[in-house]
Length: 72
Image (cartoon, rainbow, N blue to C red):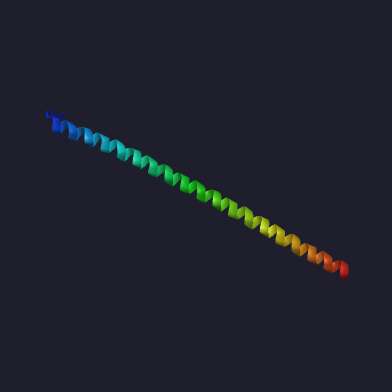
């Protein structure tokens, strides 16, 4: 423990700086978690879009084949 006012102020400043660093680290960790979660959600959405696009393409092809069979 510091014996002088200057020493006590330095210790207090160090304590505040440590607390601020811990808070900044937690914010950084949460920001990374949010970024990762958002990336996963975007990937899931892209996959669903690709699946629906493939389904629509397949349905369109089936309709063409059916139309050709009826007309041919």
